[in-house]
Image (cartoon, rainbow, N blue to C red; front, side, top):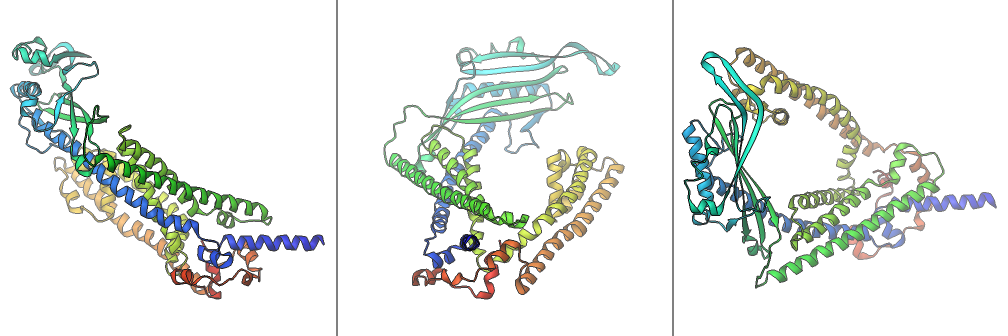
Amino acid sequence: MAHLDSDMKEECLRKDLRFYFMNPCEKYRARHQIPWKLALQILKILMVTAQLVRFGLSNQLVVAFKEENTMAFKYLFLRGYAGIDEENYSYSVYTQEDAYESIFYAINQYHRLKNVSLGTLSYGENEEHRIGLKVCKQHYKKGAMFPSDETLNIDSDIETDCIYLDLQGLSKNTEDWKNSSFFRLEFYRLLQVEISFHLKGIDLQTMLSRELPDCYVFQNTITFDNKAHSGKIKIYFDSDANIEECKDLNISGSVQKNAQYVLAFDSFVIVICLASLILCTRSIVLALRLRKKYQRHVCNADQWEFINGWYVLVIISDLMTIIGSILKMEIQVKNITNYDLCSILLGTSTLLVWVGVIRYLGYFQKYNVLILTMQASLPKVLRFCACAGMIYLGYTFCGWIVLGPYHNKFVALNTVSECLFSLVNGDDMFATFAQIQQKSVLVWLFSRLYLYSFISLFIYMILSLFIALITDSYDTIKKYQQNGFPETDLQEFLKECNSREEYQKESSAFLSRICCLRRKESDDHLIFTN
């Protein structure tokens, strides 16, 4: 009797395991279990994508407003700005007269802002709750320098002096502050002059999208950089825009109603994702319970069969969608203004949702090839990339230290890495060769040897081996599909059951027409292959 009871428990465990590893259509045929997770995933894909599209359009308006205001500020406050930045700075001056005129021009334009600006701008308070300009200069302590005699007597300690120009003071007399001793600059020891001020603005274009307007505070800084003392002062303009809650909004029309509809839609998305999260978590808990009941020795491959990676992917996607939707609702009611974090969460979650669709395509043999090839080639590809990455890093550091002073694409480690990655993909090759400065013959010859060796090594050898690894895995999968996949201990245990017909019940005509076509017995091994 004890032996019979043990056999019955094993048979029940086998049936539960077989049922767990069935796809949604087979589960419906076996026990008429409605595929709730499949239905939720389809609904979630549609809703999350619609939510992302709407938020993306709104985020584009925000970014465009910031960029357009930054461009307008450059035209307003930078004397002689041509509309195109010089490298990473706006423009440069080469004479003392131009330096003084550029400083005074920015201050005068701030004073005349309401008369010259086309935007919805006004003056804002700085950190000290003062309305006006803050001008600071950094310079070395007093000393003397005589280039003709090659003598230098200077204190390397840096001093910082600041002056506040209130709006009222600028309005009374424009000549008093210009004659101040603060603006008598000694350029031989001057490091930089920094002009900072705050402006406020309102983005009205959001109302065209039936959304509440945003109020901005622009923290603007104009920097005159003379640290190189090369006779060239670089002028930088930086504008940091922060969104703040608008006070005393009184807007009539359909904007308020539309905001309520959007909040209701976001709430429904959260409910759908919570339901999907609960169902997928429940499935993983059930798998762990079955694994605990399965007392036999389990290899590593079988261990991962119990932890469904697609469910983990869906859970991560649901969590990111829920958090992103909450942030979106807070942004909608103007409690917070972190558009970047919200866009990252929603964008990544939508990516994972669409990647999860591959799981359902994998139920069909012809579409399953991609998943199986990626799964088989991934370990070998990672090991190969680890080895190739060492060579890549070596070329990156070498190019940065040798070619950095002579080539714009090699001035920083990140730009070097991006340039080399472009070369691996065959992009921008001639421009990389042509832009090297020929000031040093030795460096020019080294650049040719460096670029030719990198391109030959990575394109003709490393990239070809990389493709060969994936091709080899693909050929292996194709052979397995023709001759049968190797069976693990878990699959052999499941195949011992001959009572599968007990679970086979006639499915409804509706589901049969959609997707639940019966598989051939010869394809049973595909059911248990991840």
